[in-house]
Every structure is written in C-alpha cells, then in structure tokens.
Amino acid sequence: MDTPWTFLPYLPLVPIYYALFVPLGDIRYGSIFADVVIMFSIYLIAKTNRHGISFYAPLAFAIFPASIWLTSVASTNIMIGCAFLTLSMAALLREKYAAAAFFFGLGIAANQLVIIALPMIGLYLWKQHKFSRFMLALLVPSAVVLPFFLASPSRFIYQVILFQFERGLQPDGLFSLYRIVQVFSGIQLDSWLRVTILLGITGIIVVAYTRKPNFFVPLSGALLFAGAFVLPINGFWNYFLPACAVACAVIPSINDEIDQKTAKIKWWPRIPWSASVVTGREQKPSCFFTSKKKHVLQCSSKVWKAKRLIDV
Image 1 (tube, rainbow, N blue to C red):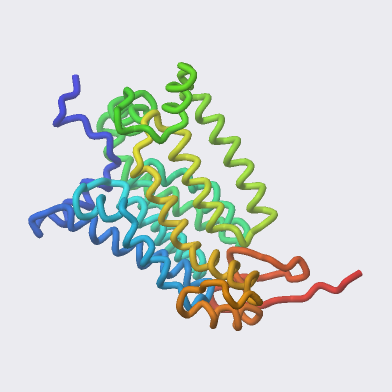
Image 2 (image 1 turned 180 degrees about the vertical axis):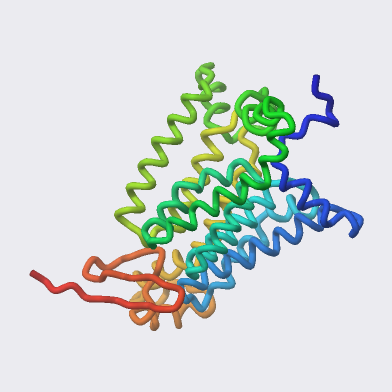
C-alpha cells in the first residue's frame, strides 16, 4: 500500500527540475524561474506579431493572481510544464522547429496536461512540412519517463495517469465539468465519456485551425482550457494556468484588432503605444487574426507579406 512518502502523482521531470534549486535553500526558486521563462516566452509569442505593445503580454501574466500565488506561495509542477509549453510555442512561431519539439517534449515529461496541446503542435509542424520534428517531441519525454515506468509499470500508470481520473472530489476542486454535472444533476461522468468529449472538442478546434491557420495561438489556448476543464475530476484553478498564459500572449493582438476597428473613433480609449500599431497595421498585419477577406496573410517570424486577391 502506498504511503504519503511513496505516492508521487508527478512526472519524473518535476523532481529532477526542482532538485536543481535545492542548493539555493528553497525549491520555490524553481517556480519563480519557470515564471520568468513563461513571461519571456509569451513576450516572444506576442512579438512574433510585431506589436509595439508586446510587453503588455508578460505584464498581464505577471500581475495575474494565479502566477503570483504559484510562484511566491505555493510550489506546483504546473509552472514547469507551462514554461516548457510556452517556450515551445515561441520557438515554433520563430521557425525553430527542433527546439520547439525538444521543449514541448520536456513539457510533456513535466505535466500531464501539456499533452493536450499535442494535436495542435503536431498539425502545425505538419503544415510547415516539418513533421519529422514531431518524433523528437515524443522521443524526449519517452527518454525521461521510460526508466521510471520500467521500475514499476503498474504503480506508474496508476499514480501518474489514472489517479487524476479516479481521485475523490475535493472542496477546492470546483472548476471541472465532472464537478459541475455532479453537483447539479447527481450524474458522475465516466472517464471514457470525458475523454470522448475532449476528443470531440479537439476535432472541432483542429478543423477550425485548418480553416484559420492564423489562429494557432488562441486555438491552442482554447484546447488547453477545454482539457483542463473536461478531463480531471477535480478542477483546480491552477490547471488553467497554461491556457491563461497563452491568453495573455494574445492580448496585444486583441488590442490591435480593437484599435483597427475603432481607428475613426477619436474618443475611444487607447493604451500607450497602440496608436503606432494602428498606423502600421497594413504593413505589419496580424498573425493571430485576419479581419479582411481580400487578404491572404502569410505569417513568419522574419517575413510579413500580404497578397491582395483579384476580384472575379
């Protein structure tokens, strides 16, 4: 029978990562470092869109109450997986495909919820004709996890995977589909049913991405949110941290779209430096959103092109 000292529902990279910060006297320095990596990564994601207000993305995350709590008070593995995930997305948008696959693999080896983004990462690499890098994203977590799995396969599967689907309800685990349905109807959603629901949502998001490739970042955030809400029995608010980090990265793009649509409204309030974004909008179109149907926008970290379609 597992004791509190032998029951470890964490993937192997978590203790390995925090062990690096033991000499500093407090492993929470590891969470603080991961927090800095997340802010740097979402800045790079926003900067890919060539925004003069890109720094508002990490600023929004820095003042986000969840990030403050998780780094300064609690010490949780969600910060590690989120750091590698956002770093992977930033590398993808900058065409560093091998680095992106490597960091994503580390994210999978750090937190179970990161694997929810696997369809979006794989599809992105496939559309860029770099699907061979996808194998690296699978090999990295396999190399980290396999020795621990072979030590005790049954214990590893239960503690790391099945435990999240079978653990009892906890008072602070309010934000999950299972909890909401159980409270209001008394129905307990089976694990396979929740997986099926998430697969359906994933299919819808994947189809949306094939039609709107510029929406890679916000759709990835939506998929991460759906997974954190649908899969676990207990919906702890820290499960939504990756989705919130991605949402912060999209804030400059949302502001850009609002500024473009309200450019002729003089009294509309604007945040500093957004005016320069409005004037340069045609030369540097948005990578996350497309508002003009007569433009085919090709987004790249180095090249920005806009081709006008000929009216038939």
